[in-house]
Image 1 (tube, protein in one colour):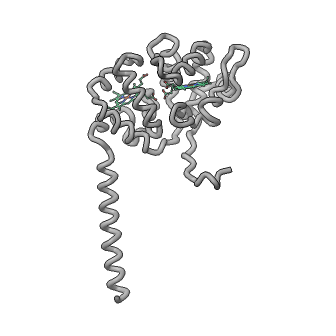
Image 2 (tube, rainbow, N blue to C red; image 1 turned 30 degrees about the horizontal axis):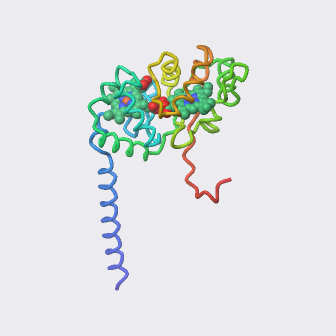
Image 3 (cartoon, protein in one colour; image 1 turned 90 degrees about the vertical axis):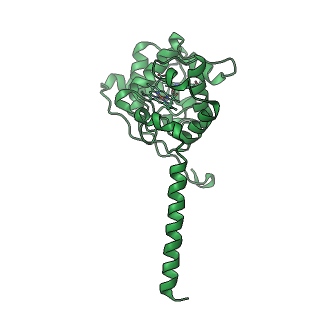
Length: 223
Ligand code: HEC
Ligand code: HEC
């Protein structure tokens, strides 16, 4: 075979591969996600300014649980309850699979923290407040707040307004677990011990933390 012909064949092959890959990627965005992107971002990265959370990289199990919670009233939110309600179990599954597979974006939201708030926020995240029975956030959400899949969601880089609203939701009963959801009970017991100043400080500090790109190195090469 001449070199010229070989190049032509391999170029044709890679074009075909590229075509297949592109349509596979396009096909993997299920139609039921199109309405979500206006608020949760084209790549599920969230919208910090509006307080809409990042969905990319949350576990499929966690996403499924949250959408079901909006449907059966364990989570109450004026916007999301109405959006989740008409979704079928099958649509929820494909939505959850889709967003969980997207890489979590790492852009942190700018923060207007003063030095005292910043050090309080950081202290709660890294060391907790044991006098008041509050464990460090990173004890459960991992160092850096990157989360531990599937039950402990990443909290670094989520919008401050969203983090704050969730802690308040646990305290006021608009975010509740089912008896089967022990994960929710864990976070409930933390939220109940937090006061307003702590909630604001830790939410703003976490929002300003970049979410590191996921470590995709093979396990045996990680430190
Ligand atoms: C009009 C804006 C808007 C649209 C459209 C929207 N969302 Fe949301 N979403 C929100 C807001 C606001 C919250 C925070 C609600 C709360 O505090 O519980 C949220 C929260 C969520 C959460 C909880 C995230 C977490 O970390 O626990 C999930 C899951 C979610 N949305 C999925 C979806 C899906 C799937 C769609 C499309 C079918 C969608 N959203 C469409 C605004 C929107
Ligand atoms: C004992 C373990 C534990 C500790 C400590 C903990 N969390 Fe959580 N947190 C959880 C679990 C589990 C969930 C998931 C709850 C669910 O499934 O509804 C969660 C969920 C959250 C969420 C909701 C995330 C989302 O996407 O909606 C926020 C915000 C949060 N935690 C903030 C904090 C902050 C801030 C601290 C430290 C002050 C903290 N957590 C400490 C276990 C913990």
